[in-house]
Length: 317
Ligand SMILES: O=C(O)CCC(=O)C(=O)O
Ligand SMILES: [Fe+2]
Image (cartoon, rainbow, N blue to C red; front, side, top):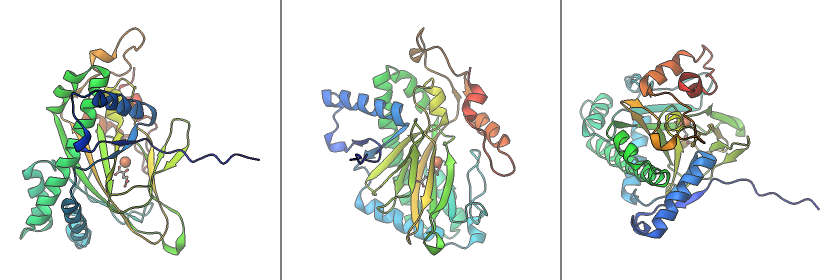
């Protein structure tokens, strides 16, 4: 009789604020658990209570209002320094649409974008964008502090934080016509430091590739947040945490909306000394995050084919 192997799952880690006390032994154990999950999968599912029901409902309304705007308005969201901006009606991924907000943890970033989309104002949109991005950025900071504690590089992370900014992306994927299974977004690794993803409704779509080449389908709920390493974390962690390839596959008759907060470093990124020793030689040279993005964009060919392992070809030793 053949055994029925269970499909692989991403680790699920409870980070609800009410249970976390930074001095307790369970907190130290959690730091190690998160670090192991990131070392093994490059990401994990955080169960997190930082987004209230009220804030969640407000971001659902905000997404509807945003995607309902006419295309002529949405295209005003032009590319930022990290290469983000409006994307839609793309021949290779026709189901996909995206808008992104730079510096979304600052009132100025949220206001500039809101004014661009609604010149006569939309205060509730602006408030919910700001509040939501801040909560997800706080989750990322909490996670990375815990990782840094576990790896003995807390001060290096605190230094990096001073130069960290956050982008909020609204991603929408239409349900594919004719009941087919179709690509929503092609496999890639993120070019940021870290990414946190929330899916607005229960269900699948996101898939993450494991180190042994298996794709894990991720069944998400709004209270689950994927915390995922980007290429810049791969380099910063001296290769201990690999950014995982991921993609979105759409099937069924429901559209999918995800909100994605990604961090960017406005300074030189270099491997902390504490991660380098005889057994762990330096694997990445110091580099500038935005120059890396420029390099990555310049090596992406006309068909959108990306360089494999761009971070190692850019600054790997
Ligand atoms: O929608 C998702 O779950 C993933 C989106 C994504 O990979 C991205 O925006 O880089
Ligand atoms: Fe991504």
